Every structure is written in C-alpha cells, then in structure tokens.
Image 1 (cartoon, rainbow, N blue to C red):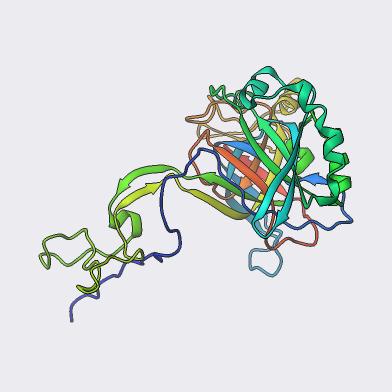
Image 2 (image 1 turned 60 degrees about the vertical axis):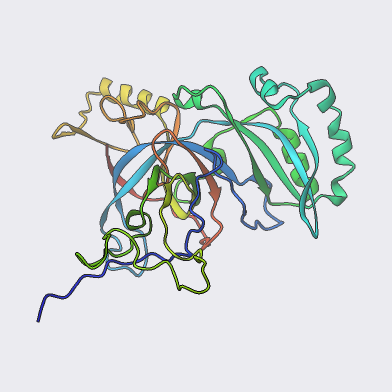
Length: 359
C-alpha cells in the first residue's frame, strides 16, 4: 500500500465572507455588553496602538486544569494606550428601522485641530445641552464621542481618531449627567479597565493583497499532471445552471479585514514614566537588573517594558500601556479598539500573578 495522502484542512467558505478590504483603518464595534442598571455609569471602551510582543511568566490561576498553580509562559502583546479625550456625547432613539441620532453635545473647549476636523462651532453647540436634556425621555442609548491622538503614542500620524463608545450602567438620565461631567476630560486606561479583566479587541488585520485560492482558502492542491493547473480548485460548479455560487473558493483580496477577538485577558497595566522613577530609585539602592543572552529580563512591577533600542517597527513605549495575553489582530502601529467583555464574563476579576516579563 502506498503512503496515505495528507488532506489539508479546508476552512469553511461561510466563516468570513465576503473577504473584502476594510473600508477604514479604524475597526467598527457593532455590539456592546449589557451592564446592570444598578451599576455606576462608565464608558465601555478604550483604544491603543500595537507596539510588539513579549513573553510573560506567570502562575496559572485557572482552576480545574492540570497546570493550575504552576508556572506558565505565554505570549503577550504590548499596546500603547494614550489617554482619550471625551469630545462630546450622542443620544440615540430606536424604532423599527434601528437607531437614529437624536442630539450631539460637545465640550466647550475643544482643541482647534479637532474642532476643525469635525467642523464644530462651539458657540452653537453649547446650547445643545439644554435641548438634549429635554429629549432624554425618548433616548434609548447614550454614547461618548472619544478622540485619541497617535502623536501621544509616539507615532508620526497627525490626524486623530474619533470614535463612539457606549456608556453602560445606570439609567439614561444618570448616563447623561455622567457624560456631562466628563466633557473635555481625558480618560486613562486604568479608569476604564483593570489588570486581570478580559476585553474584546477589534482591529484591521495585516493586508496581504491579491492571493490565490490555496493561500486564501487553504484548499487542497490537485494531483500532479491530473489537470492543467495544480493550484486551482477542481470545479467551479455544475454546467447547469451556469452560475458560480458564492461558497466556491475564489482568488481575491486576502488580509486587511476587520476582525474581533474575544476574551483577551489584560495581564499588566503600567506607565513607563512611573516605572523609570522606580528604576532610578532601585539603581540608587544598587539593585542589579538581570541580563540573559542580550535580552533584558525585567520585573513587571518595578521596571520598564521597553527592550534595548525599542520595539522593532515601533520604537520606545512612552506613557500608559497594557500587556494583553495572546495575539492581537493587525500590524504594528495599528489602532486597536478595546471593548468590555461581552461573552463569558466571570463573577469576579482575579489579578494575575506575574513573575517575570522577557522583552
């Protein structure tokens, strides 16, 4: 008997269809988690920029697994999370046709570049607060209008990202009062999430251009000399009717798609400025920093997250950052939106026990 042929797994044609290019570099969040009405109002999203990857050595705190209580080495993705500015708020009404924007209220002192970008007139927009408050009886959802500048993350892009984030907890009137107090303020990542919590990440994946069916859909190669081609599908469909179904794998755009990954645990929330101060104090006390084969092995709680020379294709991480367990869609320097966990939300948040971070 001859050797058995290995059949490459075929991805489901209906899993991600159509695989077209994303319309924007900014991912769109279409669903939001339910927050109890007795909870305090809060903004359910933040954002960051992908910087690089590290190795995390931690104690596995998962119950009922063979590795519980033992050391676990896992991949971590570093996201630079500069503070976001609360530009305004938007109220939505809902009917059979979906959501409809009812009012927009913006902060009084908006930076000139943002006001010019959004074509705002502050004198007219300040009068909307009284009108919006009278419309709260018809409002079903409240959103915060946030803005983040890539320059604060050390990137060269001047144009800021402006997006909406839902407000959860409390009723509509409480959410309105909360957003009214937050107008013009900056929100840090520690104000929105905490270490040990899980988030959903939404981003645009790496673009790979036009690719064939083997790379795009992972179909099986045909036998040698059986047909004119090897790297094509065997059949596009029947002779009659003369049409190609959308489920048939075809060549086309591969990558640069919007993807959302669920239940990404935040392992570390830190700030490089405070860690540099701690490192300076440790140097004064003559505390050595371990070095291993050209890589720096640092204590996550007392020293920085930057490798020597910075991360490749990004540079040095400055300001607030988080380390998320696992991978994150997209290439380096790309915007990543962080949303509160919408699936499998645990009853309580357990802070991870980090032993070491190898950068």
